[in-house]
Length: 269
Image 1 (tube, rainbow, N blue to C red):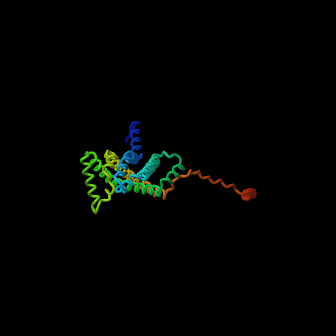
Image 2: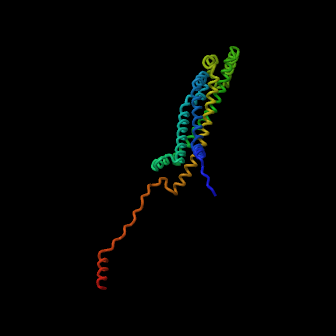
Image 3: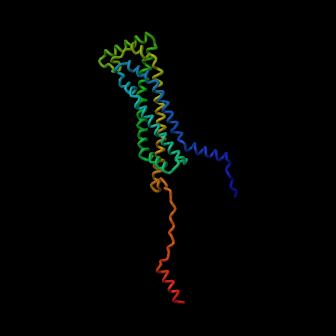
């Protein structure tokens, strides 16, 4: 049987395929998607917050997550960086790009089962926060769009809305949302907040999708790290430089035995 050698083009294609399968492309895509959503959120947050503040104290509960937007965004960004870093370390380890065994041993300690598990829990927490924000921002989007549509309906629509809110406020069971709501002041402040409300909701949905991708990547990384830890329990992580064993020196005959042998030979003669 004749063995066919691979051409340089085939070898290059094989190496490219190996790089594509090993590199953390999924984590990188989810990371970029989540940060695009954060940017969209940050650009639309100010206008939506002004619109909710103009509604009055009835919308304080909905406006609170908009004010605390920075904390979930920072946690989401940090977990994204951590997940991408873990993916890069595992990929470089598979590609044998970590250099010396000491460096590999140090990085493998950083991506051990416990640190990776903690980052997975943080990613899950960030996903839950962004998912909750998506529901709250959906309610805020509906409110802002309804009130902005009334403002864009002209003076007649605004007058009817004012009469309706006055009637509801005078009732025994007045909704808390319109307790101190003034339609005229809202229209003067946030009549064009429709697009910002939609952009805030869309940005949150994009962040949720990015976090879902990061969660999937972290689940894969946890499996790989646990498998590597199981293998390392049988074989050590770092292979120490093995020194050649010193060969035992040939034992020299003792002086007494040598002299006895020479005396014996002399007596025989």
